[in-house]
Length: 343
Ligand SMILES: Cc1cc2nc3c(=O)[nH]c(=O)nc-3n(C[C@H](O)[C@H](O)[C@H](O)COP(=O)(O)OP(=O)(O)OC[C@H]3O[C@@H](n4cnc5c(N)ncnc54)[C@H](O)[C@@H]3O)c2cc1C
Image (cartoon, rainbow, N blue to C red; front, side):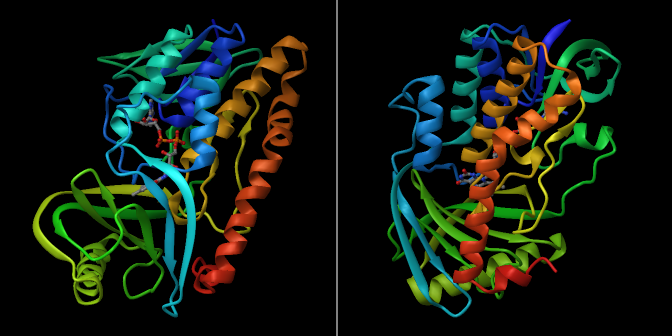
């Protein structure tokens, strides 16, 4: 019997697993992929993410971030007004960053099981039965489960929870030149270029161009319209397009509900619907992962009734949720489009 089984070795999962292991729990962290695994992401670590991660995991190794640092975000709204927010951050490849997190968690006593999928879970009176698959199906038992399995959470579905609306993302990694400052992340909110946002940033030697849509059939049209705009406005010259990748974001808006879990199963990160504007989700994932683990630990230490677990967790994340809602409301002031985008 584990104290805590954590599903998914992204930022939320490795944080939850490490925090629980540091508090003396017997922890299993299950990841369906072999690490390092790719995760479609711009990889910007804002100051809040850096501080949260370094507090629990120690200094980020100096050779882990990309050559390009991040100095902030430049947002252009649908009326072509530009807003610049300066703040020092880092830029990482998620494959290396997430692998580092999981290895530090393992060093803290977490049992990491890779290439293993959690298929579903079933709550019993005093534990959760977890169904796993790795060349065959088998089961584990845990007192508490923390689902950190991202925007398309299978665990949520297996518990009959509603699925979030989703935004499909597509970004291409290109060689070329552009008259924009590669140390900033540029977001464009004009609906001509996306059904959510379109973005440009630099990662190592790549120019990265991305768009988010609700209707996947339109994704390449939006992407090429965005590239034409960057070519005419910012002199973008693409020599070669090296690769393209798709991703998924939960469609989070002000007023959108978070879902923190049910009974002995807590959700964290994107599985709980935590995402800040312009797709910044690593800070929320780290923070909710930590708080989910703290809630489980205080349940064990204070010998509380299991019915208190989700409420304990909701209380802990209340400030982070407020912060996220404030951020979205702020965005609707800069871009009125975001206040009705989801209707
Ligand atoms: C295009 C794009 C750009 C982004 N850019 C940024 C950015 O620059 N900065 C930022 O802060 N955020 C960014 N985000 C958001 C960020 O990637 C997410 O918010 C963050 O990764 C959420 O972390 P998580 O731990 O909740 O989930 P994830 O990082 O999605 O991790 C979930 C993990 O669970 C595993 N998993 C899933 N199902 C199972 C299962 N059944 N069994 C076992 N394992 C499972 C997955 O393989 C994965 O490793 C971006 C997202 C996209 C799509």
